[in-house]
Amino acid sequence: MKKWFKQNMFYLVGGLVGAIAGYIYWQQVGCVSGTCMITSKPVNSTLYGTLMGSLLFGMFKKDKKEEIIKKEGCNEV
Image (cartoon, rainbow, N blue to C red; front, top):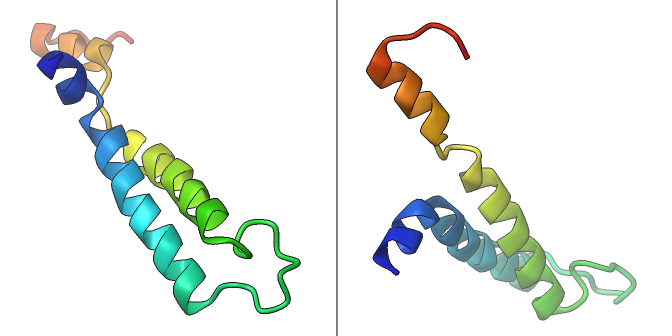
């Protein structure tokens, strides 16, 4: 179980940061008229922030393939 958390740490941290950012965005900016799909409700804004945060932080995760290539000193991908 610890291995799974370690492998997906960037996604989890990104989701948490994104959720907080989404909620704060809803609270500070929001949508006064209620017609905005994402920012009209705090749940929608928080879930959207979670998705975007996990995708953003997930970009910084290194692949196992890249690590193996660097260890072996190969230049081929």
